[in-house]
Length: 249
Image 1 (spheres, rainbow, N blue to C red):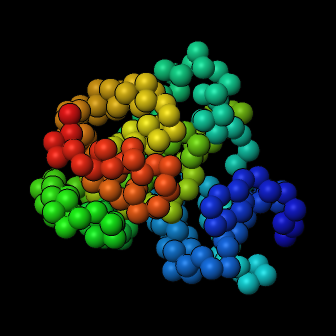
Image 2: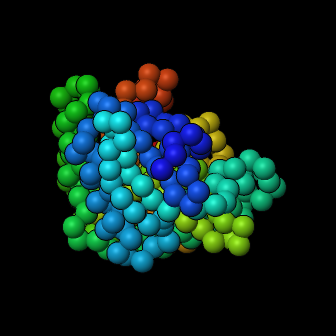
């Protein structure tokens, strides 16, 4: 196995290609539990029949944990949107269709989205009153058991030359309410400075899933609070403006 062709770099990890395999190598101090949970998530999602790269091996490389999967040749949906801005609406349709397909699946052994969100809210440095407000709002949300990707955005979709779509990166997968997953995708577009695209995405998601926009918006402060735990200072002001809106309009 050769680690000489870097195809992507993320915080705490590097992704390499060696022929038809992909090797995601985590930093030395990355949590072993998180690596194994990501591999387990991916294995469970494979069982749902969704189109994803198959997991081949979990190993250590020079003392660092690594996950080995199939390499999928193609371009990300994010690349395609950048290269063909005139096709944005068509690509957003595809994005929403893929996300709705994810939400048709169940995987009873995945972690619960509600548990994860409660934990994240507790980890924030928000004041006790705001945390109470968010925990209460979360408790009041309907309990569902749909597969939620947790980081569903165009950079996690690969389109092959034949037009087949694969969904990558299942590190944040949970089971729960699909509208929370949509709220997060909306948030990711906004954090990327693409607020017009975010609005188009949300309109499309609500139309295709027959979901009231107000219902997805109720998740916004919860999702923003969970994102704030990542500690990206450049995002903080924007996220706090959402968290502090009791009734998101």
